[in-house]
Image (cartoon, rainbow, N blue to C red; front, side, top):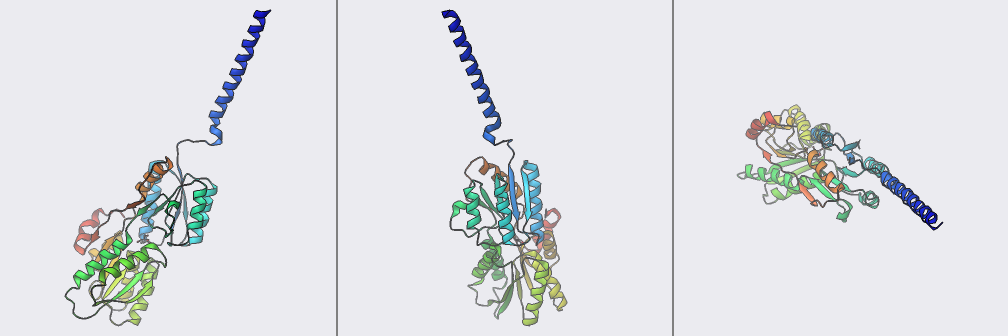
Length: 329
Ligand code: AHR
């Protein structure tokens, strides 16, 4: 009798252990409801398609995501901040692993960045930064030093005009109002020429980083100002648009008007090699590989540097001729 009771007790204990074991296995199979297949999903909000630089940047991001095995959700904001905010909110709802974006303007991001932070989704800024005081709202900023680009452009001009005795009239084509590269390039250029009283910015207007904008604003500059010696365009596309206006006004670009731009995309480099532009400060759009690498690191909880600056150079007409055959974008 005693033996039978002991056998029944062992059987009950075994079945309890067995059921418990199956239940435990079941829990670990479902992983508490979150399936982790090791693949990262990135939600990316792009500024738009305003320039050749932007097109090259989009290609770099799409190709690098595919190469790195990152599932990319891509949105083109068509130059509108409200579209970027909407896209970021969609990515939060979809519970993507990482959000990356290039902010069309610097200000007004705190609320949506806080929403991403509260949802536990890391944000990476790429190409352009934001002016949020709370740096914990994003993990890192990968991109160029736009102030430096403006400075390099200004320093080259100061060197070229150091013997000038009379006034040197400069017109400036800015990027879209409120954008980091427009604010910063203006600042850097202004600081570089400040010490030379002959160098004067006589007109400065946004051309929105587009060829059409560059052409239209340059036409106005030419009408309003009989003597223009220098054009500083915040990107190649606006400089290329301005070439049309300058030629139509009967002037020779690169000779009658010295033209300085930023980016060094192929068409800009061709204009420089052809003698129509005089100097370009490079801004690299090939940010995709570094962005994917950072996404993997922040997703894995690794600490990444708060600022990663893109390596860039400058080009004279001779250097453009040499670099053109192997130019990637
Ligand atoms: O943010 C980078 C700038 O945006 C590039 O210089 C310009 O071409 C682009 O539109």
